[in-house]
Image 1: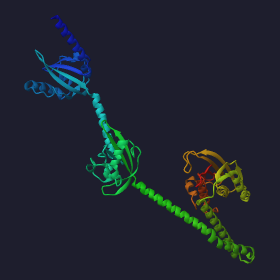
Image 2 (image 1 turned 45 degrees about the horizontal axis):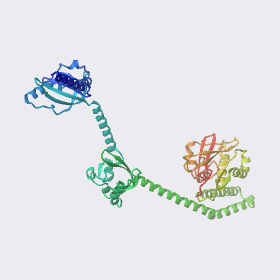
Image 3 (image 1 turned 30 degrees about the vertical axis):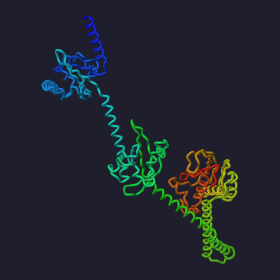
Image 4 (image 1 turned 180 degrees about the horizontal axis):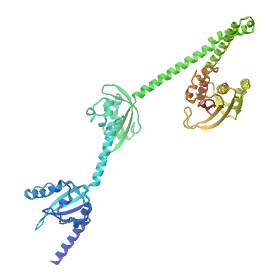
Length: 511
């Protein structure tokens, strides 16, 4: 008998230890709802000490309206035997000591002892779970909102190519309603031969694992409901879910881009045609126009030298004007020829000592330099691969401009220098190419930099008729610089002079 009592005591001790160490709350109440036991987990969940709850009605742990309805529920159960929650379990709300209401899963079992009836409730706090679910819902709502409002089309398909999700942008792009697409094969949105080949591609990918487009992205064609075909850029990602794979395609319509590209192509073609016409005009100028121009100049020179004294003052004025106009026309024709030569294919590039070229140019301009009282300051220039004639023309145009556009009463100072530069993102050079930067700086009249883009265009003259010239010189300089793998720009202020910066590739890949 004593052994049975000892065994019973040990069992009770083990049971109490299990209950006291359980993670979930365990509460027992009598048939009137009065709390008889409360394990530490339940006390911690509700924020009470066990003795604050034991002996009180369980409804103290409930918010309204459950609190007011609890006794009625107990009475109905005793009267009818029909339990609303007993033996079932469900999600309910609890009220902590501090007044906080929180969600938990409650499962209740009924135990009939020899002398009474008790109910045991197991409380599993799901506050964090609810927060996680809310965060997931928020994330899902955001994700759905992004998909629905995305400008690009988004389509998800399963392993067999059947569409599972099509966002509004994709529906609009292909001209279908969502119900017309879901569950259908994605090949319906493809023109031939892609439509017929798609299932075979999917099968090969699943068999070999070698992607044709997945993870790469490329330009493809789409087929709208109305039968029209349009270009779009497609990128596909593969997603491994818990039990299966899905593929998500991102569709970016490039119809307008293609239209713009075609316009640019036509524009480039038109520019090329205009360029050829300009070359043809320059050719005609050099032959058909120069012949009568030489006769005009010859007759004018004869009148100037042999018949000048016999002419009236008005006649002399006419002769002078005629010769000046002929000279300006000759200069314009020569400038057009220079522009045409730079535009057309140049001669072979060879190693050129820029120092030697500069010396030759300064020698040619010796009279102009002396007449203007110009001071030339130069530093050593490097050797590069270039077309010698064009380099000579580049220096001649820029130095002549520096002297021509001088300030009145101020002796022109022209500084010529260079330095090596490494251009990693240059417009016309290969990344990492060795470049040389040449600077030609003067102390002349300068200009407002808001006109910077204009001065390198053909026939642009900021000073109008104040200075002689055709407005072609700087346009020629830019073409020379670009042809040699570089470019030209300038820094200037009115009345403070101008600094032209020319970049040239040291080595040149032949055309």
